[in-house]
Length: 389
Ligand SMILES: *Cc1c(COP(=O)(O)O)cnc(C)c1O
Image (cartoon, rainbow, N blue to C red; front, side):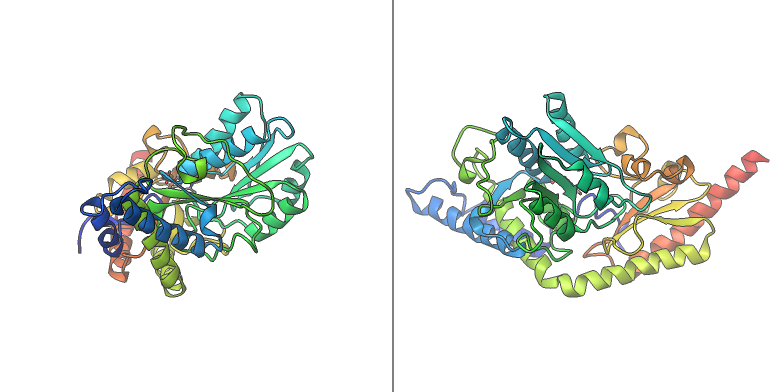
């Protein structure tokens, strides 16, 4: 078994070899610029990009011309929020998000608020769920956009997207969904779910880092996005710059693989997660699952260990690669804004560890992690109780 065991798949995933094999030719002999229409090299690159655009569109029920390739979900979210709000600037200046969103959404929304837009941040309950009635009353004639995540990257809580999509559509408000954690894992159909914009990320689904996409609906409302990056008419004039052809090809392959394997992979991950949580709960006291126990991502487990500091536990577990929250802010050592928004008490927040199981996680990895965790938690608890007496 290769150590450390990787259990941080909500932060990033390795590139699947089937994805890297698809990418490789586009890093060498097929090096054309997808915008160079005048010769064979460019045309072949464009064909590959078109294929990937179809694969990505198909996996979420969209059309090819509704997909804009970006550098990742952070850029997609920035483009969706800023692009829509700037476009509606004259009429509607109100944006609604929730307190447990990813930093990409929170900080983009706060930057817009600073520039004069009105921002409502909805609260979440102790399971990380938003209250649909609170959303309903937050929406007014001034609201341009609601942006909510499909599943939370820290606690795995899944948001009822269809219901929210319908509510937004009925009120004439655009709806953006941050689906970085769910594309290829949960079924997504932007048409039946009434989603107007959707962000996704390559490196969360076994493609490379530095590539992602933004879906934006073309039919219901004429939706023009003000481009963040200007300097060329690539990507329907919504995102200038030469395309990362190899990255895009890999993203296309990755969504296709994930969709094809979803029906068997997701139940497998649910079983593995249950095995991990079950064994820990059985062998240790004071083990609590954070997030919604029912509507949750299959491979995510956010667990609080009573009387243990998560940071100390991570140090005591050099053979297990897991985390104490989202990767984006872990270096600041701040308590998780998601667990704080859920109103959990400080001890529970400080004792929380996130495990992200994925495509390459096997039963043996889970069992090994359980042994190391039981040892580490037991020994940390002994030393703190010894220090107290
Ligand atoms: C990872 C993630 C992002 C950011 O995606 P990048 O491609 O890394 O920029 C945004 N939202 C959620 C929910 C994520 O998990």
